[in-house]
Image (tube, rainbow, N blue to C red):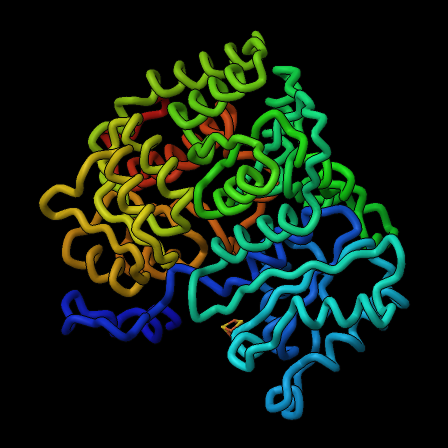
Length: 462
Ligand code: SF4
């Protein structure tokens, strides 16, 4: 019944749309800002806007991570909507530092406070002058209205704000490599740290949501879990030898600012998802940190190659539709290309010309019958799939409606995933992560093969 209601009205063709988005392939900027801020130790995200925004953003993160997500709000009412949110925010600083005792409050704006034109640096300056920010406690802000950008750019803006407010150049260079992981899952951040430690690279990872949004059940409530990047580590990014930015949308702004502010040269890479992107990541670490690639990593790469070779007959020539965020999609598309799959449709809701250009560099220009919606929406993707379906659809949970309607094997990947578990606990980055992606893809393709096989070719062994 739900399918009938939601999807049967999607026509294969419709008049051209230029000013209307249907089923967006993105969500609000503040959700990304909130997620990034949760990756800093003893930091409380603060939504400068109405309660509704904050509730929506918290609940979306909670549904994805299956963890309580802490955040405060300026709770705009009619008065603040007309006269501005300064008094609400000043009151909030008092309340939050008194009741919840964070080390840092990370304020992000919303559509409403940006439309009013609240001047956050001025408000934070006033709070400092009036002694509303206790000694040893800090406030920073990022501008994240949702009528531009997406959750991916909101994440990038908040990471940049941490560098802007806290990174310090003392003049004494260290061997530390700053690593900006981009929007990946807590398990991915843990996997990046394992790879860095395996190569004995001294590093600071910013942000780091491992140990925050994948915490164990202990029976005790921890307002501030033990994970997260420490403030002193963010400060010493200013003396780092170099930085590595994983994903230009989510990590590029911070890495570029660290370069201009503190003269820390940056390497801009794709997210290390799949074989080739992980190769570039590992090789970059080897070069900039002057270290050797560990035997453990070499073996993991070999295992991935073995799996790719063994399973090639099942992936070769399969067509794929992708929806998600630009940093993830570029690397994922490249990996699928390396599996000899055909990436036919790609859609992201995050605007920006860089995505299309990078995708073309990695997998070549779109061929006849291909479609790249950037920015585009899931309604348009659904129409493309109605006209010419693919063998596989990979997207966040919202793709399940399309997959069910068109009968397409479906892999959940990206944000948000609200109807399955495991994404926060099992990494998709690195060589081992690539094996997990393959396992997911092959699982749905071979389930379909088994379902459709006539009795005489229904095989026990593949
Ligand atoms: S679109 Fe704007 S107003 Fe709506 S929830 Fe997101 S930030 Fe709030």
